[in-house]
Length: 194
Image (tube, rainbow, N blue to C red; front, side, top):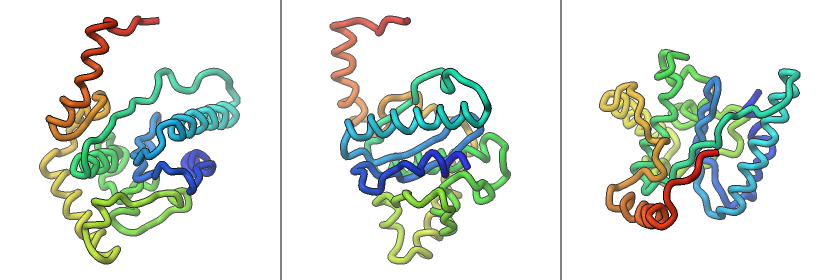
């Protein structure tokens, strides 16, 4: 119900593509390909505002729903994007909400792995790396399951603080992306706490 509401206003004409989602009990993980930063910023502002109104009405309350701003992270390449999607698809298992990711309704894992497209998934677009896994959906699903299971075997269900970083990707790309931020902090100092 929450995701149906959250993504009901999402426009297929948006230049920003929604790749993957997992709804947890107190937060969501979403992976987008951002083509237009201003459009994306407005989209997220609307997204969170509408959800806040929806949540408050449903629970007969008022005030802020979220304490902090959403955590955002730029992803450097398809390999790291794939790992992030595996990470968010494994989240319900990591949180002990289900024993197997395929059993969690509020995740795009079931779409990627088994082709089960729930009504709330109508705006999901598969990323390039997924489309390269095979020439048919069946081949892609089988390959995805193998890669996801390998990820689980290698990473286990260990929490990896991917989303505490601003950039996630190859080390040289991360260092290049961090350079202007470091320079800004050297000139201006750390941000002031409110």
